[in-house]
Length: 111
Image (cartoon, rainbow, N blue to C red; front, side):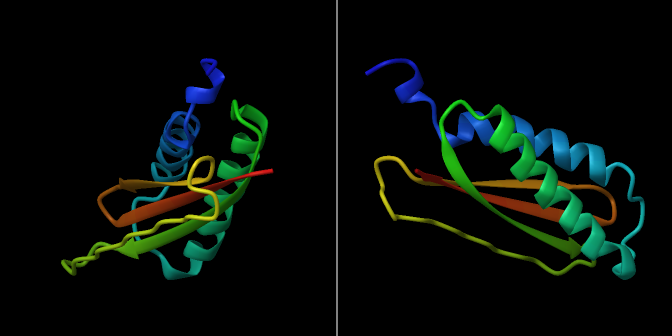
């Protein structure tokens, strides 16, 4: 087993999701419903683009972005995948600012 074989989706996705979420959420100081579709699209596009360019293992990526307004309600999310449990995986990243929560789920499927 080489060191590349030990690289996981978390290794690739954690830094990318943190960078993208931090950069884009820092620009939004209020939850504005009419801006959320564009924000979701920008986050998912940038995560997929960077994962495709920077990830160390060749995979196909599916990215799901959920944005919730902070209003006192709780949220619980879970996600998993098992197409090929030895090589495919999913990673969930939570980011937030004063106005909203952002949950980014990245599915990595080997080719």
